[in-house]
Amino acid sequence: MNARKSIYSGSWYPGSRKACEQEIAAFLIEGYGKKVTGKNLIGGIVPHAGWFFSGSIACNVIEAIFHPDSKPDVAVIFGMHLSQNSKPYIMAEGSWETPFGELEIASDLANKLIGQFDFVVETGGHFITDNTIELQLPFIKYFSGKTKILPVGAPPSSLSLDIANTIIKEANASGLKSAVIGSTDLTHYGPNYGFTPFGTGEKALEWVRDKNDANIINKIIELDPKAVIQESLANQNACCGGAAAAAITAAKAMGATQADLLTYQTSYDKSPGQSFVGYAGLVFG
Image (cartoon, rainbow, N blue to C red):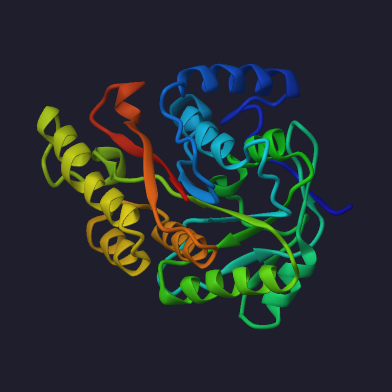
């Protein structure tokens, strides 16, 4: 099988099965009390920084989605740092390597999409190095077992919403049970990112946490994909606004009527400094 090699294992997250298992066990303990129960969770929003910073958030969202009674046939993962005018990306065949083994691409579904949209098609040997999707894959493999994946790079435009609706339409027509994940970090603030509208210090942190990130989180909770794209472009509070919006669209097409915030943190919580990033974990049901 044409396997796409993991690029960030051993650096952004552990490179071995045993070390990943140990990290996941610790993340699940950290996530205690933040779980949403009693709902049919079909998707969510996760951050994609290194596991040290945001792995616990992503792990607990994905664990909630892939609970023992819900084993989807395909996990649709929207991500990638793209501009409004970018083409969408897709991987259409082969597999993607993780420390827990390879995740097979849902090639039949991918090829149906390629026939309808103008994608940049990636392969195991030719791809753009990207952390947004890869950082989620060990969690998906660990919790889902044999679930196939459909990795999609979603630009912040209405095109991504059309793609998301079509994915669910085609999956349903094929009798596939789906789960959906949107990968995005929130505000990148500080000198390192060239974004300091409120200077530095406590007031800057409060503005990011209580206003800028809160605004985009509220748009996600409202399940308003167009508003999420507009908000992310206007206020730089989601680096992958298209991925978040596509995940919302797909979740709604699957019947989601509510989004719940599991947790919110910033990289400042782990490593205080003038530059920091916001992270949120949400689930759709």
